Image 1 (tube, rainbow, N blue to C red):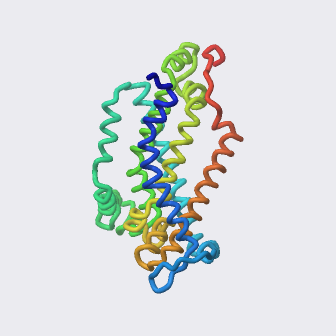
Image 2 (cartoon, rainbow, N blue to C red):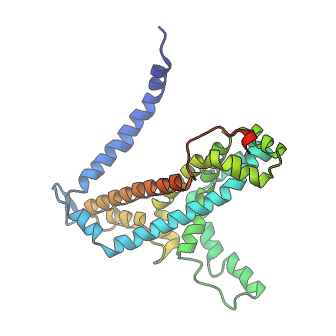
Image 3 (cartoon, one colour):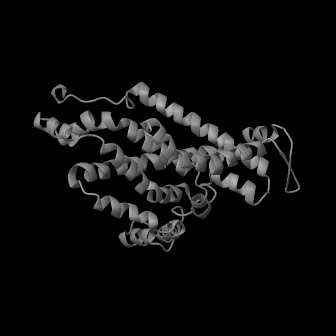
Length: 292
């Protein structure tokens, strides 16, 4: 019996779809139902109220940490993308070797908490950064502002998620044929000009995707803000986690989670609309070297 390519694709995708439905969609729906329930004395009471959403939307603390989470997420995603693009360019068009990419991805095998504690050591008052500044005479005493701040959270998250961003950027750039770059150079375009006139237009969608995926991962992180954020580095993820772990108010935590989800989706569409309006995000097209 011959199966069509569509049926073969459906069969191959079925296990993944079933897994996502069981372990992601169903728990999300359960959590969504919790957001309409009530909490009494650390107990979840079945109900149907909008109090949790109203409390979240009228909470100054919630909006403060949400704005902080969005700011840290956008900053981290932007820095990661700026650092990932030249690395991806080198891996795809200069070295053309997978070895360097594998070495970069190996860092993901290191413990998440070990990397956080490493940055606590580097940024502390007795850390390497303060020691260098003291030796150079830039400061007279150790700087406390490096640790337990938005700066500490951002630089640590860049270190953690940069390999992921590099992987996405490299995958996007690898779809652009090197022949186009060579043709642009043969026609007198510099390497920088070839990047902006050939690579950037074709890779814009992939780069935008790398930016948004990095932002989503960073915005949902709560371990790093908890260990490095202090009072100025708190995020929505940490606030939501505290509702489940400390206060036991699961309905309020669920409501805050879905409000943050809606904010993330809205922000995604805003950024995509801005990208399309400015021409940064375009439909994929084939570049004619003669038109360069």
